[in-house]
Length: 91
Figure (spheres, rainbow, N blue to C red):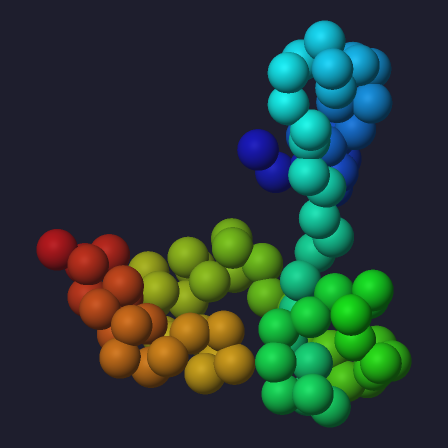
């Protein structure tokens, strides 16, 4: 979709509705990143790190890497899983 929709538009639309009327409770999440400090996936709510310790990689960027036969950083996927995905992109 490119930049047509805002980052959290898919979440904000639920603000227009009463959760009881919908019959569901929407769960809203922030973007996740790899935290070099804790060596795990995190969000700004769960990580003590600053921006210099965060590695962001979008799904679009991952697909681009895989199409070129390149693997995303191991912080985002185990290398053996990434290799399978990259191979599948070329079948």
